[in-house]
Structures are given as structure tokens and as C-alpha cells.
Amino acid sequence: QVQLVESGGGLAQPGGSLRLSCAASGFTFSSYAMSWARQAPGKGLEWVSGIYSDGSDTYYADSVKGRFTISRDNAKNTLYLQMNSLKPEDTALYYCTRKKYYSGNYYERLNEYDFWGQGTQVTVSS
Image 1 (cartoon, rainbow, N blue to C red):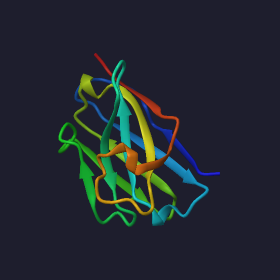
Image 2: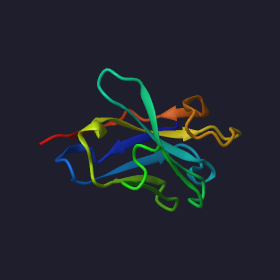
Image 3: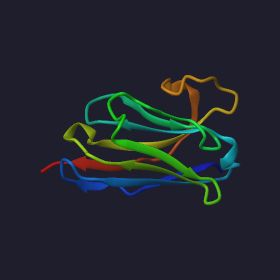
Image 4: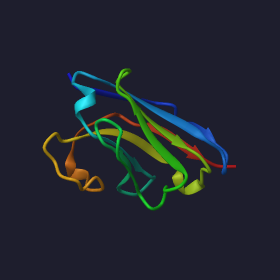
């Protein structure tokens, strides 16, 4: 019954922007930390950014720090990723994922997550 549905992906030029959304349902969204992860063609999953349940703490991979901003609207059960200054290296399938309720503070460890969306494609090319 837990569902995570990503949207907002598409084609952007280098230096451009996109805003991804993740609509969550089937659980108490405000009780869970969330993250975004991505998978580039031919590569493994890479953690991108995480946010605490109430939005008070945010975390970023070095590769996106200063360019991406994670946020959430618990009243709307929605997670966001604002992506600015996009680079071709950002091309990937982007996933929304829920952090395990009793997990620790290692947001970058993908085994900390228990549910995943189907992903939304981001392509950065001129």
C-alpha cells in the first residue's frame, strides 16, 4: 500500500533547472525521513540528498551540494528536489525513497531505505 510516485523529470540544457516531486501515500509521511537517489546509464545507484521527517535537517552528496535543494511539504505528503545548474553528469533515473523508521544517521547508505518509487528520468544535454 506504500506508494512513492516521482514526477517532474525531462530534458534540460546544461546550466538549466528542473524540479522533481514525489507524491507519497499509504503511510504517515511526516514520521519518516526521505531521500533522493539516482542511477546513471550503466552505473549503480547513487544517493543524492536526504531530509529529516520534519524537514529540519538536510543532507547532500558532494556532487550536488550547492546546486540541488531538497524540501518537503508534509501537509501535502510531497517530497521535492530543486535542481539548478544542471550538468550532463546529472543525467540519470531519479528515485524517491523512504528511510527505515528505526534506522541510523547514515543517509548515504542505501540499505537504510525500505520503499522506492519507480523513478523519473532526467536528461541533461545540449
